[in-house]
Length: 131
Image (cartoon, rainbow, N blue to C red; front, side, top):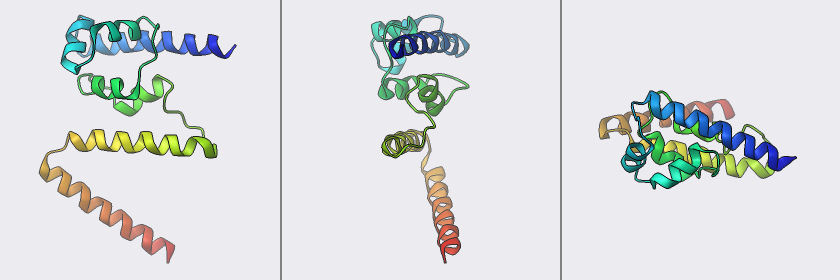
């Protein structure tokens, strides 16, 4: 039964990814794959529901897809889920850290400095709440 659910979810994600590709102006899988630096065959297998994407592949694709974030792709693909069992917390933290670094990479130097200031403010607020 679990395998059937996984295959169905993988196929559903493939259909979703194809729609997002087209919505982003990519008529062909090949053009998106080449821009994202992944194999056209890999993208074809993902969109066909034959292959589950890796977080790295989704990160590369997210840079070229409009109206969808890396985190949303992870969730839609079933990689990032909101289950808070202790064994999953580390995986979720690792994925969220990956998302943070992905977004960081997109910022220019001015925005990175602003982000660091915001983090410092949040740390101060947390310290005040804990005292």
